Every structure is written in structure tokens, then in C-alpha cells.
Image (cartoon, rainbow, N blue to C red):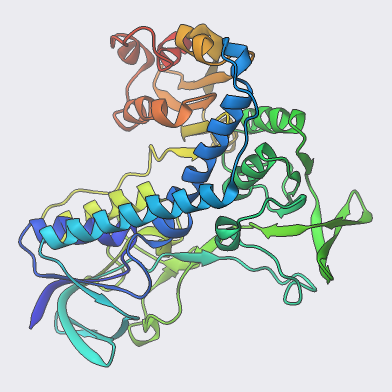
Length: 450
């Protein structure tokens, strides 16, 4: 049998493409070596957000008196929180399998390797069987970066995978890396009483996000007891019995500190091994596979989506890339746009941004103006956030075109889509302001800030 499309990887890009292709009547097969849903569903997006929501509920209950509600003896059970997280993951994985079945997609459990690509056919091997497809989509995802820090191999560190399965709250935790994953775990464990320290090499946490809002979030987390060491380099790790030690350099001086656990969170990188890529010699870029605006690699029969391109490493980007790829191999010429890819950090409060940041615009020499308002200008925000501050920032071009929007405050993740649509459609501030927003909603802050 010759398949119309073979897909390596069953994460957000892979299962999205498979379902879309199947619904178009394309004979589709998906190879997944672990569990459908990929890192996002099994070890990333969904598990962490499930844990963070439990933390938010716990903190809300503890702070209930601010809202005229009495909650005495509020307690948590981390083992039950983890069990609920696992239940949520199982339910969503089952949902993905159901979608693929409905779309008549064939699924194979195993590690697929590309053997060749010629004569408009791609040959793939999996579980000692050979499969032939007219087109191939590679969605192999990413893996945790493990830096070459002295002592790391001998130290029982956590990555996000181990942290997600832990059923006891550590007394203290040092997080190496102040990116999205590190800050979300810092927020989670802090709520349950862990003494958290974050060590970051850059001059601010959350590289790539709006710097001003990142600093405001850091200040808020600092008030809650999280310590931050910026522009700091970890030089050694050490295991001493049940305790662990971290040696780091800051301002030309060396320090050593002890902790119960170390969480390593310095980023992710595309999975480029074990796929048989050496057999087809595809062009690479940013340590991943190079693609064009239709998600084609240097071999026109082979597409690549998601983290393996090394570009965005976000599940929602991968989903859209998969949609574009399937449209193109079906004969349509829809192009991938990266103008309005939202970035979200699901701390409490949330921080979200889309489009350009001030730092990006300055580096590109683009003239812009900044409109900035406290979130308290939205009545719904005040009603739901007692003694909590937030900021909405909108960046506009000289002609009023909306270039970037950045929000600190709940629920930033839900309302940032409004800004994303405006940026993708190249809307001017006056055009968006003419849209009627329901009142009272937190989303009104965007209209107010314009």
C-alpha cells in the first residue's frame, strides 16, 4: 500500500495534520514512539497548567477573606493534585485517539526511520516493517537541553518530567533557568511553601517576552518569597547525601548554596537523531530543519512542522504549521504567518504578549509609540482581583497600526487573542477601537489602552 501522507510524531503538529488530512480523504499513517499528544500534552502544556490551576485554587481559598468568604483550615494533597493531572492527560490523549479514528487515520506505535526519498516516494521503516508514502511530514518535536555543567551527571536533578511526577513538596528548590517553564514551576512550588530560588544567565527572566512586564512579574514573585539571581552562571552541581549543592558566579564572585532539589530548565532543542535524517540530507537552520512558507523542507516531498524546525517551539504554532502543510500538499497555497504568535506564561498573575516587543522594534529601527494603562481601568478586573495590580501595554506604528500588545494580569492568556487578530489583520488602533466589547469584561482593557 502507498499512503498519501506519512507523519512521524503524534504531538500537536502530528495529530492536527493527521486529522486534517484524514478528513480530506487522504490515506494517512502516523508513527508515534511514545504517547500521542507529544510533550505538550504528556509532559508540558497540559500537565503544568493542570498543576498551576490547583495552585491557583489553593491560593484563592487561602485569600478568600479578601472577598468576604471564610475558608478555614485550607489544605492541599500533592499526591491527589498529581493524580488529577494524570487523569486530565489520559482523558485528552483518549480524545486525540478518538479524533484520529474518526478521521480513519492509521496509527503505528514505534520509532520510525526515514530510509529514502526519491521518485516522489518516501520510504519509512518502523518495527521492522517498510512503509511507502507520497508525502512525509516530520513532527518529531523537541527534548530538554542538558548543559555540560560539572557534576550534573552525578546529581539527581529534576527536569520538567520529574517535577511533574513528584508527589512531595521539597523544602527548597533551585531552578536553573528563568524561562517560561522555570518560572511556571517557581510559581507552583512557591504557593505550596517551597523556598524557591531562580538562577538566570540573562539580565531578566522570560527572555523574548516584554522586558518591562517581565520585571513587574519578577517583582511580584519576589514579594511572595522567590529569590532571583540574574546575570548569574551556574558553574557546578553536587550531590551530598539527600542534599544538593549549586555553585554559581555573579558579579565576578563565586557562591555556593545548598538545596533539597535542583530543577534544570534551560530550554529545549529539536529532536534530530534517530529519525534517519542522515539518509536524506535535508537542509538545516537554527539547529532544526529548514522549511519554506508552506512548511516544505529542501526535499519538496517532505514537510516539517513544530519544534523540529527550531523556530517557535510552541504547541499553538505547531498546530497552525500543520494546517498550512496539509493545505499545501492538498494543492492550496496558504502561507504560514508568524506575525502574531502569542506567548503566554501561566503564572498567577498570567503574562501574555503578541507581536513585537519594545526591544524588537528598537533593534529593527522601527518608530513606535507606547500606550500603557493599569489593568484597574477594566471594572471586571477590579471586581475579581482584590489588591492585585496589572498592566496592559500597546505598541503602535507611526500610522496607528498595532504592532504589539503585552498584558500582565489575569486572564491575559484568554484576552491576548483579541490583540493577535488585530496584529495579523494589520488593524489600526482606530479600527479596533470601533469594535464593541462586552461590558464588564477584562478584555475591555485593550480598548481602553488604545
